[in-house]
Amino acid sequence: MTYKFRRESESGLILVNIEIDDRYELKMILDTGATNTTIDSNALYLLGYDLKDNIGTVEIETANGIIETEIFEVNVFSSLGLTKEKFQVQVYDFLAHGIYSDYNGLLGIDFLEGIKFCIDTRENTISIS
View 1 (cartoon, helix red, strand yellow):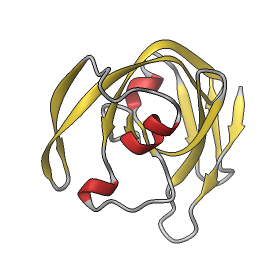
View 2 (cartoon, rainbow, N blue to C red):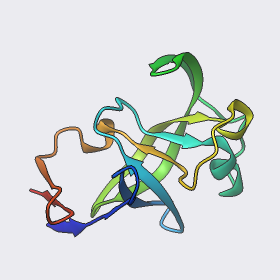
View 3 (cartoon, rainbow, N blue to C red):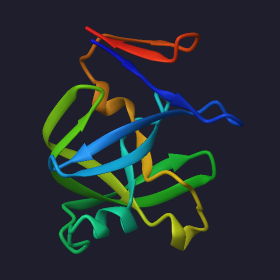
């Protein structure tokens, strides 16, 4: 399977669409350097998730230092033609921490765990086999 992606013109970031619970679509940045998928807590709240329903917290190291994120289990999480059920995501309040973005988070390498994939930056495609 091969999927086209968009690139942000200035930064070259790889942009992908994800779908949560077969109903909600979000724009995210594919970040193969991120261990875990992270979603803005404001986006998750607007999708109807109760932010008190986290299943734990974890400290992670970012380029700007150590932060604490909450862990949520999303019923169905899809992107790039792949679907994961009961997928755990990290949730962080972007706005409260001064992060202003047109995107709702980062699609981390955890989503592609066990999948053979190739990112072609000349053709702006991701091949999954």
